[in-house]
Amino acid sequence: MRKVWLCVFYAVCIFTIVFSLFWMALPKLPFPADSGTETPASEPGLAAQGRAGQGSTDFYLCDEGGRVVVYTCTENGLPDKRLLRTGIYVNLLPEADAIRLKQGFYVSGETALRAQLEDLGG
Image (cartoon, rainbow, N blue to C red; front, side, top):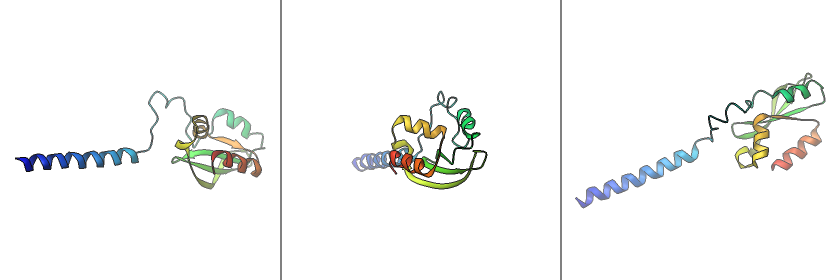
C-alpha cells in the first residue's frame, strides 16, 4: 500500500511540474475587457494614419509575436515590408512602452529609429 501512495505522490509531482512549464510557455493573452480598447498590431491607429498621410514618417514599430518589429513605410506612410525583428521582448518593457508598441507607432528617420530602439533596450 505504501508503494501505491508513493507512486501517486510522484505522479502528482510530475503533473505539477509539467503543467507549470506549460503555463509559463503560454503567451500572455489580454483580458476580454481590454481586447476592445486595443488596436491590432498589424493595423495602425487612426491617429497614426493621420500622421502617415504627411509623408514625414519612415518606419513603423509594433509588437509582433511578443517582440518589437520595425517595418519600412511606403510613400503614403503605411507599413510595407518588415525591416527588422529585434530581440526586445515587449512583455519585459515598462507598461507605457508596451501599450504604445501594441498599438503601433511611427518614427521619422534612421536617427530617431536608432534612438527609439536604444531607449527600448536594443
